[in-house]
Image (tube, rainbow, N blue to C red):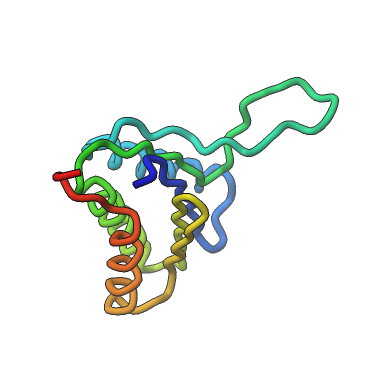
Length: 129
């Protein structure tokens, strides 16, 4: 199982400050789980000729998963809860592990359950490993 999960949040009509605030709330929630770390997602390489500054992608988090077999499942559940709390706005979340992407937004709860189960099963391991 890969140990890094990239999370990209979005909320329709949200400015950078609002996205930064929402990302901070989710980061604190994720840190309470069995994960090694949750940091701002780097925004890629700086432009040629500029000073190397670690710019963070607004709305992005890099979750370093722990050794728990349920770690990924718990993180995805927390992200889905964040998504559901935006019932008065349109929110979306993009999760990525090793190039495998799961995007959640307006899908029904049943569709999200199926997509999440498939995504988690592809990237989980048993405690016996």
